[in-house]
Image (cartoon, rainbow, N blue to C red; front, side, top):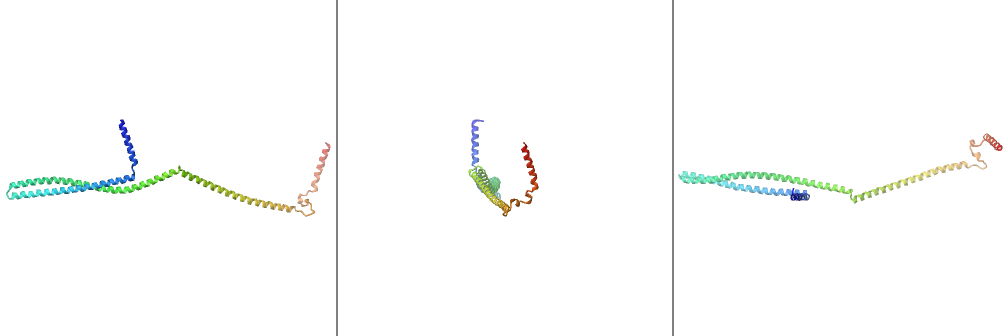
Length: 257
């Protein structure tokens, strides 16, 4: 491949890429429909011109046929009058007009076929344009939906990286942290209040026990503390005598050392 061929291919590819990027689907649909309508106008004009030409050819054919018939009658009249030479001339005229009529008949048949084809193409183009109009509205709706979806996806994608989204998330975290602090403070205040009431209840029990103890220890005048003790707790003489004997024995042992 030569250098100029490569350059030409690169230029064409770049131009094609630029054209593809510049194509707006909605505008291209409108332009395509406009071009189809222009083709429809031209096709209608062509059909009208073909029909007009057919009518002129048909008139020429009828005129030539009438002339041929007229000279046929003239030849018959000349023969009836015994003028064979005049009859011959009339037949020659009749022949010329008949040949012209035959040629016009061929052109007329050809024009009729062309007009039928043009009419079929006209009907097909009208149907295609009607279908294109319906599809255009549908495609434009799909394009609008696709653009909206693309914009939504772009907005969602930008939310993960935009500073506004990050700031919103930071503020949300701060609000959650402040709510947690407020909840902790409320829980601490509740615990402190409950502990105060528990201390009051405990203090009340101690005060009651202290009052009971005071009541027990408040003795009448002239009585000894031993008398206030329960009988089981007062020392008996029988229990103190063995202890005294052991004490005396221990003193003797110490004196002998």
